Length: 528
Image 1: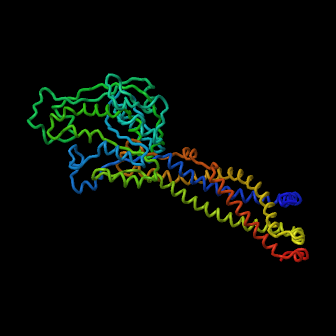
Image 2: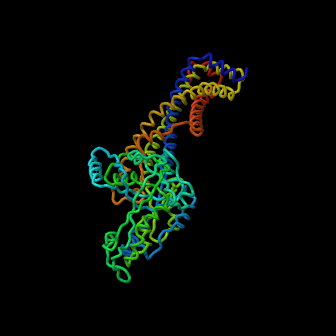
Image 3: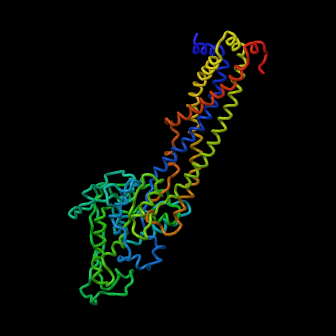
């Protein structure tokens, strides 16, 4: 009779002890599986969250460094005494291996008779909405933002901040081939679409001003000097002529914002909700039209100032937020003097803290469960073999090799344990999913809420905040991203750890018994 058959017969003969052993292995395995699954779930969830909130970065002038050599007027004029960032530099940085995509945007504004969307706020901030709604009622026309785009796909949709819910995004020709014979294509937020009964295919007008010199103006040779910037459009020599700009809705995007938690966040959401996304060429056209007559009036004004006045924003999306430091180092070597990279890595601080805390707990639990399993299973197997000492003595007396006896015991234990591990695998996954989800979501949500307010309300909003490219995840989104699903790595770790523990637990008492001679085993009433 071979060892395998003999092992099967032995299990059937001692079915009650095998059932007890199966139950204990299933219980310990379930705990071990839960620990491993939670630990793997933490790692998988961390990666999913990290990659679901792509790192969007921009470049801006380090005013503190620049002020050591230049005046504020020099820094923020169209005739800077140092090199400004160019589209060529933006594209060169965009070719770095860390970058998934990039965009640059020329911002401006326009007026409309549309209803303005007022963002939702958390409890206690209702006065922000009430004040805004009250002020809107005083205007016939309302102020809207124009955000230019340089490529067919919005950086917002690629970064996961917007969802395209109707229509399409831009085509290459719409972005790169200006055509004023047709209405300009535009993407609008769903908030504006719902308020103003707009849909894909709707055509509407936005209104901008064009500055012209009055015929009665007497302008000195060389132009007017000594003016203040806020007086540019109100000078008596300047007439503002209304221009009509037709647009056609090609797509509608849904914005993903939680209720505003402070005044700065309310304003930032107000800007994004009331923005129209159009090709850069159209934004530049509207801005140039607004100021092209001014350089004939003011001695120190020229069209280069439009680069500052129209707010050239640049954005890069990183493949992974972990690339931020390496990208920053590489990009700042290509940027002009006084420019630096700006990102918001702080939003991942609570994630790292939560992962570290729970990971540490799970590692300790893994060590504890493994040691406890070794002790408990060793004692159980020792008692199991003690009841079979006469059987083992007979095998040895008949000349059976000790190695075969050890191997038979291992087969018996591993057959029963294998069934227990399968049961533990399934039940451990259910338990782990429920327990770890509550622990992890609570841990991250608490920290995320605190961290998300770290950047907001702490001063002047950054460019990324202003255009709506900084956001935090809601609790519901965290639940969706939480992942305790089995993968190959989880299964391998579970079975490797479980079977190794069982094998070690089996070898120790087996070796102890087979050290005795057949005569001692058969004549002793007890072991020891």
